[in-house]
Length: 211
Image 1 (cartoon, helix red, strand yellow):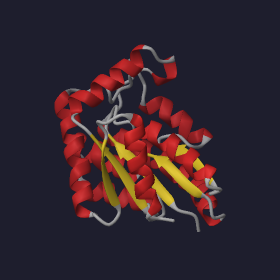
Image 2 (cartoon, rainbow, N blue to C red; image 1 turned 60 degrees about the vertical axis):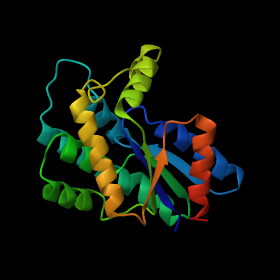
Image 3 (cartoon, rainbow, N blue to C red; image 1 turned 180 degrees about the vertical axis):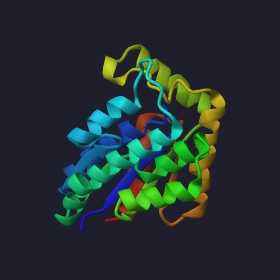
Image 4 (spheres, rainbow, N blue to C red; image 1 turned 45 degrees about the vertical axis):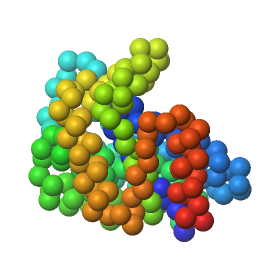
């Protein structure tokens, strides 16, 4: 079996950049690796992603949001993640089930018990071998996200979640840190404030533990 590593964090935390650098580093060492993301990763998931990150007038309720994420994950796990792991490939995933707990649980206030049941069902109880949580002050992360959106392509422009108020993002950060405290063997908290290369070195140090 390959290794399943998830990259988590709030808006502007740098997780996506770090995942790409980690994948390149693993590939350079001859380790088979793929990069994927949630919501997305499959043709169906990408369609769901367009709905979830909708920047138009369509209103999406919290419960609907939760179920859409679960649907995307169910397809993702079955079509992409599990087959790759069974072939011995490392899977690096930009957000997974922990994001649902942080965003829809802590952020939206939906019932944690329901979310855990839905996560287990949609992911076939798959749990990451390691979760890298990129943590930084909310104000810094949102500023980075807005700067990225200002000069980005339309598909990477500011989305529904980045447009939420500070309190929402503070709840998400608290949620992630609560999850990390509850599973210290799986989580590695990485300071997301330094420069890209410094953070990358810390990511590589963490991944060494899985080799």
